[in-house]
Image (cartoon, one colour):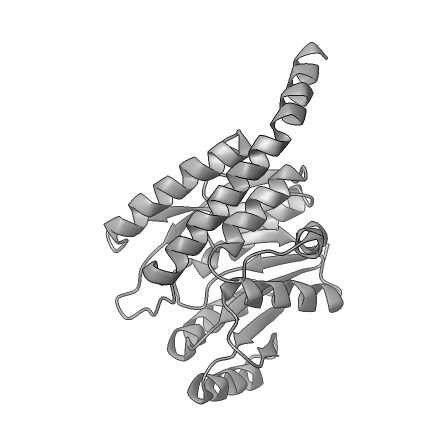
Length: 247
């Protein structure tokens, strides 16, 4: 197993410096995917890559969204010989100290998606928590299982080969809807899901690119597609579960 960390970044020039400083102690190489950031962040990332020998930059010429950046990052990591990537956000929400816990979980179960389950503090906006609960329920319905405990958490350990199989199998979302879509489609393909509790904060000066006007409709359309896919898969799923009970 060869593991890297993966950080998608779009105009997070201030916050990502702290993220990379914290990642230095992990001992893992890091790929930072610059998703078409502006000149100030590009200059900051160049300086950080020069400072931190473990960090490499992957540049996209235009901003395509978090999902597009992650897909670029997965492919770049696989091309560099990595089998797994621990992805986390550039805005400082995630507890970088948990990277070693994610790595250990992947070492125990290399075929699994190690999915962060957020433990929020009082900084978490109530609207985000309520929307997350709705997303969880819709994903549980699409999976006919609670195996995916939190589809939206961006802190996760990803086995690259099955993730790229999902990406190559057909169109997937390019923005915030990509992460729940990937989790569900990996589950449908038989990838085990290992939950891992991790602290998530909303920094007072943090910059989020989540847009209620843009991303909620994209998520709603995704969940409709996933529920439709569940209905198509339902007869086979029920037959498999019945056979499992008889075995």
